[in-house]
Image (tube, rainbow, N blue to C red; front, side):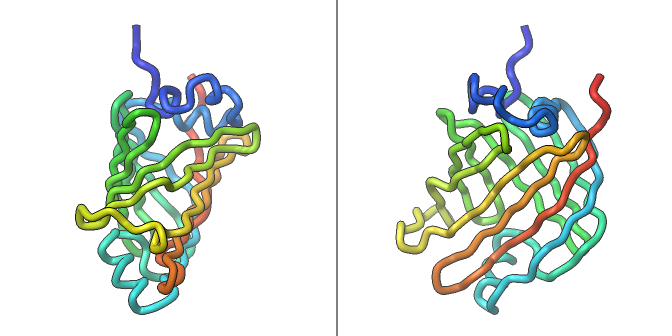
Amino acid sequence: MAELAMYCQALGPAFEQLPQAVRRFHTLSGNWSLTGQVETDAPATWLARCLAWCLGTPRQATAGAIRFELHASPTAETWTRHFPAQTMRSTLRLVRQELHESLGLSRLRFRLAASPQGLEMQLVGLRFLGLPCPTWLMPRVVAREYGDGQRLHFEVSAEVPGLGRVAGYRGHLDLPEAP
């Protein structure tokens, strides 16, 4: 019997509430290359730009094609986002119903929330250079996905108190035809 996809495991029965395109994306397994369109935002300040460099997130405003490489197994996923001006890679793992994302010099912990409108990833913890982030410095993160036919739409932004926007991008991926 095949193991459930990582997001199915994390959400349990709530996974079925998600729009069809979001479910389809999060049940892909193996290696995939998807394309779509994306807009990226520049970091708000010089210090935010330095932090974006440490994380590997986009450091300039762009708009254009995105190529997304997915390497997915039931225990881990590697996401490589080829933005118009740079590439960003992260690895996600399921740990006790939370997703842990390794992104540059940081380790982020997310809880997932499913609804018929889409998927939200809620930041619940962060380590940078191995040190825990104090609550007063915790970034405000928006990470949403929703579906539209054969397209997965996404919106991601992160703002750090005192630094402003560190990362922001939004767009869509065209999903492969269902088998």
